[in-house]
Length: 320
Image (tube, rainbow, N blue to C red):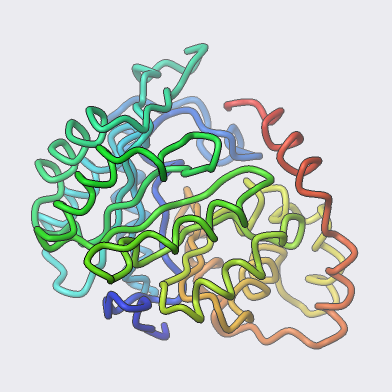
């Protein structure tokens, strides 16, 4: 697995990373989740599965792990795994801004609540540090948008500056049809003339590539770029999905095509896998060795959707 320095942080990041959004809680918006996980999704079962996937990911060379306060007990699962395995080369990033409220119920009507206030930041950084200790290297705003006002909240920005001074690298993730605006706004933030945020994590895939130019600018400005949802919440991994034909002709799998397409962009540092099984994480990791022909990229251009349509469809995906 190739290791690349994550922008100005200098952190050594594997090109494929592992996101634990779907492994730290029983319910998520992945397509095919019932097939992959079945009905045994109590805390003990999910922690065992998370540990197995982390072991498999590490064996493939994955060294970048992404969690968040809202990913159920993902930080606790990861912290326990790190304590037992004690790997010296794993880079951990987490996020604040959402609180998990699903209470491990499959039928909970609300799974997470967004709160980008300074009180939420202070509470959640304390929780993240308690669970991850000095393994935590990168702390990100979860789903920063222009509409949220987080980039104009001086209390939040002052608190973030204090965290940066304490030794944490800072970043932000984006969501929604106006990701490019949030990226442009976020990379403008400065503290003592230096960038406040060192990384950007955004949704990019062949169905929703609109953030690409803004991410290229962020990378050119020295920011590390992480890609999430490269499989469009599982929609691009299905054999009968948009990438099935290309994968069949190339003798590979749709998930590898989707991830390899993101990796092919020079402004991408890390592409996050959302795998929930050992086979999935092994298959995802193999994308680093797939080289796509030019005609495959041309064919995939036709899969791009207007951002508003993509995000409307995503919002309609059920929590499974």
